[in-house]
Length: 167
Ligand SMILES: Cc1cc2nc3c(=O)[nH]c(=O)nc-3n(C[C@H](O)[C@H](O)[C@H](O)COP(=O)(O)O)c2cc1C
Image (cartoon, rainbow, N blue to C red; front, side, top):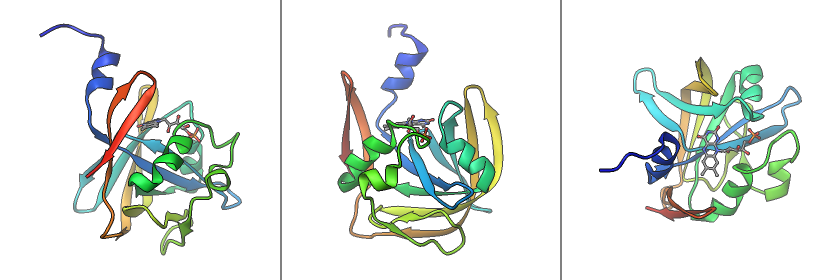
């Protein structure tokens, strides 16, 4: 066993699932990002949490709208995932840029991703300050699945490149 930096150990702790976290601004315009720091955290009530950097844009949308959608990607969404996970929503309209197909949610105003493997509609349940991140815990109001699709995992890094595979 060898001692390594905490940052490197966090990077090596893979594979990890990653999700789209989508919310809306006051004009109902959607934006979102990718979060691999996410988890299911309660069954009753059903809760799902994602940890979002304070440097990003999406956390501001959730703080204002009090709602978000979690969409679980598969291989066909990999390209969109890389865009959503690398540019800021106050600079780039990620939905227009990726032409990602959306679907209307039932209980929230944020859109679902039509071809995601799983979608969760969430209303903000609790916000927890977590150092340079904020953990948003959402109460899941509805969930959807595309049964023929798989779940994309971030397997490892090769230099600057993230390697994904689906299961
Ligand atoms: C695979 C992957 C996983 C990521 N996981 C997280 C995460 O858990 N939390 C986070 O704050 N950012 C994470 N990011 C980075 C954000 O998605 C990225 O900074 C994004 O551009 C922020 O967008 P926004 O400023 O529009 O909110 C991840 C990026 C990728 C590609």
